[in-house]
Image: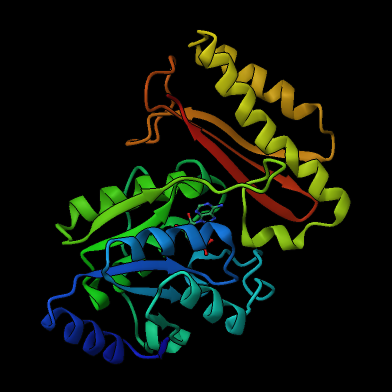
Length: 280
Ligand code: AMP
């Protein structure tokens, strides 16, 4: 496993690999890797590509009141996990490397970037779109792997890749959950034992909506009311959003159809968690 620190090193390494006939797979992360990240890396490694995991806690996607400074960091364990799952290089730049003094360029996906998480986290998707553009420009991967866990992020990045004529194909991998249904997240480490139990309401509401749809319910009004009522049964939880949207545009729909995104975000104490399902 190779540790790369600069854009120049990353670029040189992937170009060498490409010259040897290998394709390039990129797995962007903020580290504190768990089984969700592992599944992305494993999927990437299956194609036989040169797999580069990027590990960068991107300051520009955190708001001033958010958890940037306390976000979990565990480089040694991350290196081990990434290597075990088949990554050959880990790119972990400094903030100065990614944003040299005078950095003045941002990528904004208008319309999409202020919906769902973008609404409650102003500037978040601008930060995400900007860093992912920079990583794609630096590594020029054939494929880049993202989790459905961050479904709104996927919508923003898909649109961005299309709009900017970027060369990489985005591959979306399914949500990995703990055995009790809680979607894995680096932020789960913030939860106390009690809060972790309360957080299970998110996975529960996702299953509840899936079950209603399986039984033929299609009206957004009914699905959302049921979802809100189900979340209200856990009084410690504060809803940020509960939405049923078109996964491409992130605009609300009145009727659920194949591929509609049901997404939820909620606060448990000081921790904001998200979950979703793509209706089938
Ligand atoms: P993060 O480190 O939280 O920025 O996540 C890096 C990538 O891993 C993103 O594409 C996430 O969507 C994905 N990811 C995070 N948690 C999960 C999960 N539980 N299942 C699948 N993918 C995930």
